[in-house]
Amino acid sequence: MVTDDQDPGPDVVPALSLTGAAKTFGPVVALADGTIELRAGEIHALVGENGAGKSTLVKILAGVYHPDAGQFSVGGAPVAFRSVADSKAAGISVIYQEPTLFPDLTVAENIFIGRQPTGSLGLISRTRMRQEARNLFAQLGVPIDPDRLAEGLSIADQQIIEIAKAISLDARVLVMDEPTAALSGVEVDRLFTVARGLRDKGAGILFISHRFDEVFDLTDRITVMRDGRYIATHTTADVTVSEIVREMVGRDVAQLFPKVAAQIGPVVLRVAGLGRAGVFTGIDFEVRSGEIVALAGLVGAGRTEVARAVFGIDPYDTGSVELLGHRLRPHDPQASIDAGMGFVPEDRRKQGLVMELSVAGNATLTLRNALARFGLISGSRERAAAEEWTKRLHVKVGSQEYAASTLSGGNQQKLVLAKWLATEPTFLIVDEPTRGIDIGTKSEVHRLLSDLAGRGIAILMISSELPEVLGMADRVLVMREGRITADLVRDEATPESVMHAATAALEASQ
Image (cartoon, rainbow, N blue to C red; front, side):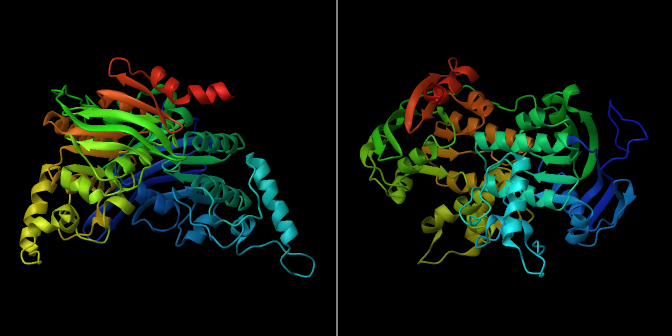
């Protein structure tokens, strides 16, 4: 039984209880002891590294998987789900990171699809459907037009629609699986307001996230998993981040940000007067050998757009980019690569990797010309080159022939880094290097970046996580509304100084 230091007693029936759940796929044990107790009227975090078993546990709750062993009850009644429909009928709804609405249907039609309200003649009543959708959004305190098409809606609005659908189904348990990964700060605040409102009305919410600031801000209790097993449950107010990290990884992570002082050398990258109409303007900065420069700011400030222009993916109207004193051709990424530049994009799945290509194929994508003989690449040469770099970066993979899609998020990120490090770059751009990966792998990526800087590589790092910015950067460039508003050395960069530079104009305009 799950216990903590504020056990409500034996008379309180949990909204959902899963104890000792196990799930295997052939010889692979995906879940050895899945245990969670969710109470009505609480927000409960489920945390663990990638591969800890969280996703398998969620799929058991959702009815996607049937456990091989364990006890499962909802509202005190034993259940044995055989389908997703069984889970929904029991009052459980899962809100995924990227909802899948029907884009050519309206918001109201998506909410009530398959169970549209009808009039006296048995025909679908669109008036009633729209009104019921409006009532749901009013309950949530979010103004969304029931008549607009789902196509083009933000991820944040799509998630709210999924929540409205869950309420219309009288769901008593909501599972939110990494719901904030693609949201801006304002959108996260709105989602949390909705979640707290649902909790206050008696819903039980299971919240899964790698972001500790969100976990500690939003949740009432935290359950930790490691290696497919339940470790512990804590009242959030009675535990620290360090204690949770220790339980997640089975060891102390003494330094989440293992930044080693590097020898700062001459200028490697010089950007002068870079501008693109309506996107960014007057961008001037330098990055030196051995230096990690962080580009910080709010979502929409123009950070990624500047990085893409520097690398040559996107065009720019004014200014110049120089690498080791040589001016690069605008809008020509191949010229940037040839000059010694690498770019690890924010979206590793869509832009950094070819997901159905093998690990070896992905690791050597940047080496195709070097590996080719008479226009052909032998499999043995490809595998040998790939193995060298995947070993250096500790990419955990059963075989070089496995598709990149089979790797965990953290190993996919290391594979993208391996692909670019194989080119031996002098300057590397990394956009959100640890987004969506677990705490242990974050520490590995941070150590790798620090090691690269120690070898003299100049690094431009874009990050929305302020602790990462402050922990890893030698200098912090803060952007706001397409401009650089501050250039802070490490000792000057504090949460207050960075956030002031990122928001001062916004505050003044309010």
